[in-house]
Length: 101
Image (cartoon, rainbow, N blue to C red; front, side):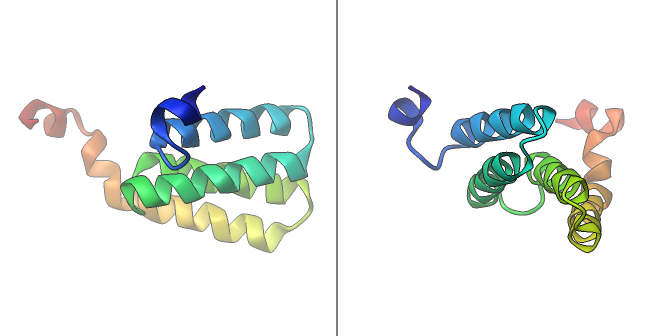
């Protein structure tokens, strides 16, 4: 239903893919989880660009799946991508920043 309302590449569709990936990860269906997290990441990147929390969380989720699959180098790469985004955006989470919005 969301696809019909928002279209295939809307952020809300990305959120749905992310949620489905999370369920697959919990079920230990790592390949399905990875597929859905990657779709979510693609949409979030297209929608908001690299520097946003949805992209960082997607990188972390993908890293966790790669870790579960035993692909430690890929896991490390994705965790580092998430960390770089969070370091650059940490000031946005400050209560002082919220006061000025």
